[in-house]
Image (tube, rainbow, N blue to C red; front, side, top):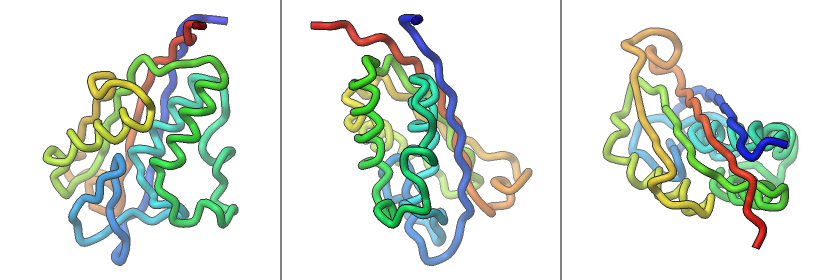
Length: 163
């Protein structure tokens, strides 16, 4: 087994009225939110899928199916806690996470430091090990048209050093 593993995650959700917009565990003021079974935190979902993929532990749909009422409206940060625990149990520690949110609006830059802080805290790593970026798609595609948001994440896992 390699001492390092790289993972990639991707998630997408539709924007709808009447929902809060949650990204990286931060409630971002906006006139719409993301539709999903949980809080639909597209950023945290992409991060979780990257981590699970790197560890060979499946994906969030497998671990937290949208058919299970236990996950209805749940905070994705609570699910991230469970993913972090599974990683530790499998002997992995997070080296770093790098994520990009694709959203035409709202402006996310003011909220990124808190997103990084939340993700790092729930993963049990330093904030410097988590990077979050946001980009528009210049009006192109469903994200550019404001119909939804997407996120990509990559991560590096390292074998945990036994004590």
